[in-house]
Length: 535
Image 1 (tube, one colour):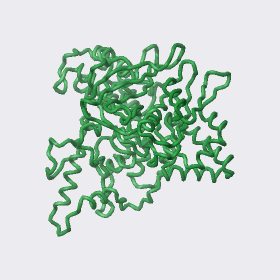
Image 2 (spheres, rainbow, N blue to C red):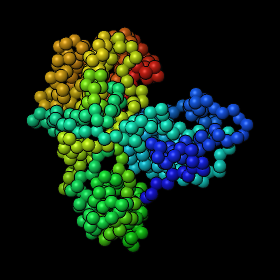
Image 3 (cartoon, rainbow, N blue to C red):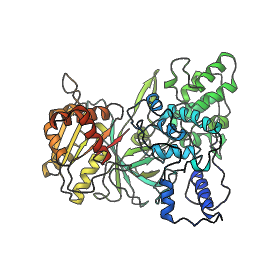
Image 4 (cartoon, rainbow, N blue to C red):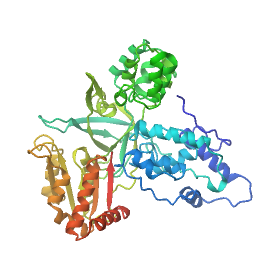
């Protein structure tokens, strides 16, 4: 469907300015308010920033106990019951503060509630369940009476001092050059993980360790052509001023099938098929396979439906960029950037499915090709301000990415702080990413400790949290010396297990009760000594 954005009453920000429509609309309204002749003293830039940060006058206490990426959405929504609508919208989001939407979770919810952001589908990690919940809450917003001026939510649009700079937001990407890819797994591995290199010298983009890299990937041509065949259309059919094939490759998401596609199907069929399509559109699962339906599978499920290419495209979601933790340091290799990417391939019903960006980077882009990219500034994931501070990094699998960057950066800047890395994967002989690099850093003394865990080498599975418990006394000593702790990886399982292990270590070796240990770890989070980059 076409995205609807608010219409500005006063055009102060020109259409050519490097902002999205929603951002430009809000800025027009904001500055129009400042310029209104109401006898008030004009606000200074500093006051304007303070206004953006001011709490809304809706009686909310600012606490967000649901802000936990390991918590199921139903539990988050339960915790948010009775809170203002904007806070319930926040609870519907993935709680990762990944920045993939162009905001953090708090600001995205405020922007929707203030109607300065019309797009409800930007939370990529939250997927369909977040989009559905936001749609339901947005309908509640439309039904509510107009808010009194004192309780109006001040929109926290993702406008920063750098948003107008090319390559600093998803709405203003730049072109970077793909340089190379290198397989990190050796023969015998069950995984396919690539070290990906980019050249940023042509676009002048830089970054700091801890930041993420946004990539605008393209859909697989084979999948696109199969969908065009199912539509019974020609790939040269004009849609949105382009060919149908071009639009399906670059502009729209082909997985998962959105509710709006099933709504379209319900208009084009009848009887039981219409009932089934409506059920899917309402988030129901009449056949028990809703979670596996991408766009192609949806077309195959309703073989008699042949929507017109234009209405078909309008029913699809826009293709979203994908974010990856940066695994290099600008201080170490200026103008270069690398990623560590797990390639996603799986089979459903004898049909091979492909991860969008991972397989794009692994096989569909060639050295020298350019692609649209941007740097997403990290929200609270960075090296300590004091280079002497010790750091403990826990990153199994591709979670090693930002910690490779941390180590390379500390080497390049001569930071004297101690460094301890926990890395794990399935098998030591084929899944030891960057083994030579890490061994060299260990030999040089930069990497003070390297603790490894291999889940498939022995009869019993052994993970990084198990290794942490084995060396708990030493780990506690580092914490007592002021070490900062970092976790990167899976939000649902690994991060939760690692935090539990950390609590146990604090309780055992710090002579605390479990409740006191939980409070200690909570204090580490509040003071920025415990940071996570999870997905």
